[in-house]
Length: 367
Image (cartoon, rainbow, N blue to C red; front, top):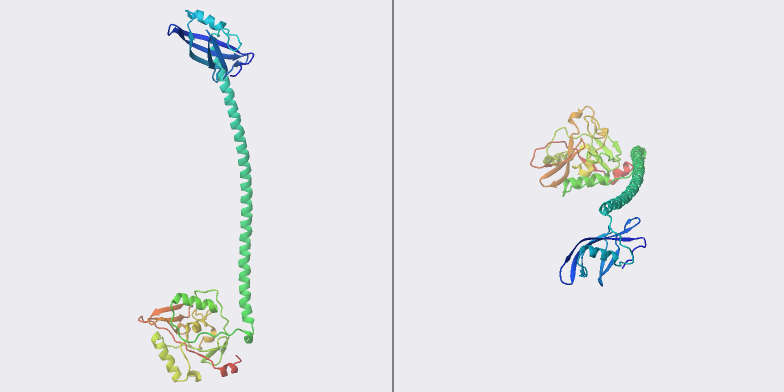
């Protein structure tokens, strides 16, 4: 049981009293615990009347109203009130409840609630201030991070442009260096001379131009170091591959199935003194393509121009001996495209025969 403060007073107000039996009566009693500073909340009060004790606890407002049963020892409410005033409750006095106690209670409750409200508002203000401070700090960090990111991105973009420029310069120097390498130290290439059946045209073509870095429309950065030597008005030797080529392709256009017949015919005639001419493979034919153009925008070396022959009729393309299947034939267009066509379709282009030089010829030409 809590002790009431020394400066506290208990106000008792008897609202009603009713006899409920021969020995007891029901009372409606209101109790307030009050100090000099106002109502005291949560106080324990003991009323001892007629030898019977009743325990009460005032609420958060310092006020409690209860219905209590006491022994019947008086017959009048007024006498009960006087009796209550003369009883003992935790050794404090019991003055008469002020008439305006409800008004006082209301004011005190409002003051208490107002104080609590101000306290909560102060807490909210502190939290808001803390939130605004942290928000400002985070925004500052965000701005700092964003500035660093933009700086890094700017430096990266500049470096990227620098790298691109340096790479282009290196590629240009490489091409110039390739042109300056003496013929005797240039790498020799042994290109496939036997016809092949391709399994997948697009994949196999890519494999070929990547292996030898042949230039074509699908590999615009390619470069193959040919080393052409004009032997006479009919033939050109590529010392890089050891292949001898017809300088001039056929004037007439033929179908793929007739390409081998044409080569058989010039072998019979011993064209340029040789009878081992053949239709080139894709690897051999693609070695002739180059990025620079001649004549009618044809991607071939100027060694293959034939004086007095209109370029619009020359070097439009040439057949190869490779096929994708018995139903598909491969050809090379001098505009830089490597193509495949169905054998049943009608397609005409030139024939440009080649041959591999012999060991004696290699010695003769210093290879």
